Image 1: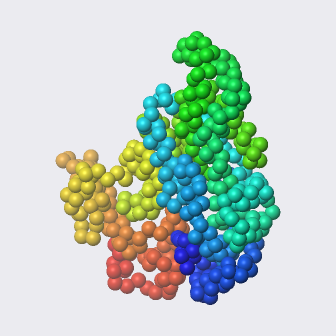
Image 2: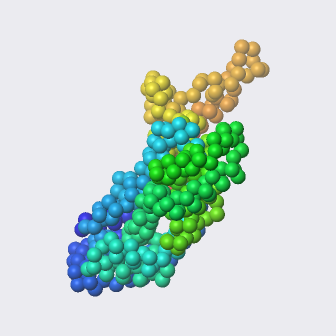
Image 3: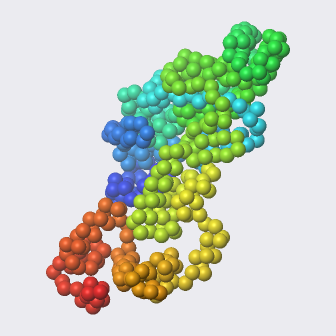
Length: 471
């Protein structure tokens, strides 16, 4: 039952999960028998394509398969998480995206720009679809002893023709276990200081790289100190290891003060992944300065700040403007965008919030509390200056009231009744335009629901509705 709750977290409103929960006791006993008797066989997968920045193919499995796989791995999940390096926080409970954001941000805040001047970002091409089954099974054999659990995991691996089925719990654990040993090897700089022959070869490569790529006066100053100093410098960096190396599933981030050392590390990373893990790396992996911004997990990192990614920032601004156009107030918009604002609040977004008019400053709160609504049933935000509803008539000396005054009052009264009787919180702009056109055709007051709008054609307006229409 705990395994089902873990799987169904925030999924209880899906139709297949609701149907599975109707007979949860019998389904749970069947899952238990499948695990004990080893009678579980994956039921197959259904393809689903999603388009999030790029097309991705998901493998959708039945709820019973998800329940069985989660229950089988539940007692051993913590051991898998302990085996993974803490610098690879993806899919781990309590860590994930925000943990990686904190690691990178704190690293950049603690170190000066001179200490972490360059970075390189390596992305593995089609990580899950191109995962090698034989290599993955060797990782499982090294981690789990022979028994029911190992045979269970092998059934799941063999149920998919190539790679890992993206969309199940075990695929996330496969993605972390596949490169768990690589993470620790990368932190030790691939054990080069332990092998004298490798150390001599890469030292000469490092000196050659410095000679070919030195451009600035500071770099020429270091180069002028000679090859012995460069050899000592490379040995010191190699013994320290890659202290600022992180991995988020298939994205690898390396930061260092030396550009030539990062190029050597890039070559070692690509070579090790291709030779030992049969992984292909995308071509965009140049060494760049940190002041250009590190774009990862929806944020852009600098030494002095963390900015929200352009895509996320535009999505928040567009949705906020759409909700404001629908007539929602500031607090309602904030509730609708709670998940996106919660993700964005870890970045420096005060200017974005101010531009949207959603900041919660003390002065703004006090000002709203002091405003008294002009009429009963209205809120303070509907109060406008008197000069905006009264227009001076130039034909009369001393001014007079134009006809726009009465029209403005009528629009205020109509707006107040509309907001009270017909809340627009659950409509889109297209729905609002369609309903407004239908109201004009029917010449009746809106009731708020599609069913009652049809019946309103058969009923004559009475009471308050008749008075509103006549006004």
